[in-house]
Each structure stands twice: as structure tokens, then as C-alpha cells.
Length: 259
Image 1 (cartoon, rainbow, N blue to C red):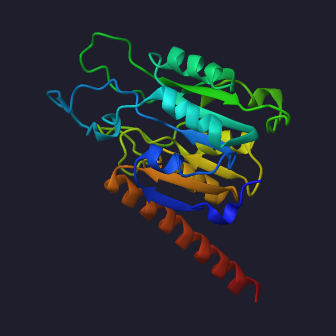
Image 2 (cartoon, helix red, strand yellow):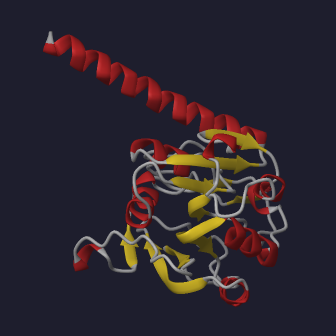
């Protein structure tokens, strides 16, 4: 049994994901939820006549070694733990192959569908309104956690709006805080609710704007977040502090109201 006192719980760590993952003890993590680089972007800025889309590609420049990532996920996951990995279609086969090599089980893929897709600027491909999420688990002796609710809530097509991953004229940013591939909080909360229980430990080695950490705080999960980009670390810390401040204010107001 892992000594959780030695883990960097509820911390945003500014470092390379492998550096930190290799320091984590074997079988110390209940759930991995993460959105690694797709390594597919080759442009910085795109401009149209009446619309300017500006996006930094720093988040996608880290060269992802899928074989090493899956090996580390297999090592740190507890028996009965699960993982959700956002993936491009080009990476899907590589992920599944390495999942099987490392004695994990690939269950199925989910599709996150959103109506606000990125504009098809070059008009040479279909406009994308979805992303793939691999779902799998480590099941040796223990059954993996799967909090099934009702059938209509457990479909592999997940429809969530709430933020956009780019800025453009007329767009509605919602909860968007500036990260170009930010995911809606409700989407990540759904995954965490299904595949973990309260006080479980959730790891996100590519934390980005901190959505996984925020979802864990809301759902009473412990978490470890790793992010290489300093700017995104500060973004995530600010999001967490804003939420924590609001929660303290709510508690204070409730207390005053009951007196």
C-alpha cells in the first residue's frame, strides 16, 4: 500500500511530466485523466479578412512518447484504477497497442461532441466538432471503479459546451481562461465521477489550465497536476484560488445567514 503522505497531493507542479511520474511510487494513483500533446500542429497564427485567430502552439511542441507515457501510467495505477486520455485519431492505434503491451485493458473510446467547432480556415477539410477520449483500466485482482448511473447517462457520446479552445469574432468564451485546448469542467467532472470515489487520487500529467484539478476540488478527490508551461501553471493556480475564495465566501455567508 502506498504511503500517501509522500505524494505531492493537491499541488500544481511546474515540471516535465516524466520527471514527476517517475518519482511516483508504484500503484499510487486511482485515476489518470489527461490531455497530452497531439503533435499535429505546424502553424502559429492564422488570419482571415474579418477574423483573426491567434493561437500559440507551445502546448503541442512537447514530443510525446506514447510508449513511455503508457508504461508509466501502468506502473503508477493501482489495481482497479482507470485512465482517460484525450487522443487525436492519428494516435489512437499507437495508444491501444501500447496499452495492450503494458498489460492494461482498453475498454472503449468516448467522443466529446461540441457544437462550437474550430473554423475550417483553409476550407480543405471537414470542420471538427469532436474529440476522442480513450478509456481503459488496470484490472488484475480488483474490479475497476465504474459508477454506473442510468443507461442514458452512460453513452460514449458526451455533449458538453461551456468553453471554447480559441478566440474569434462573435465567439462566446464561457469559462474559457486562455488555454487553447481547454476542456469544459463538466466534461472532466463526468469522467472523474464515473471512475473514482471520494478521496481517491487523480493524476493529470498535462494539467494545462487546471480543469482536472478544479474538478477534483469540486468532487472531493485528491489530485496531482503536472504542467511544463509556467504561464499555464499560473493560469491554473489563479483558477483554483478564485474557486476556493468563492467557496470560503459561500461558507461564511451561509454561516452568517444561519445565525
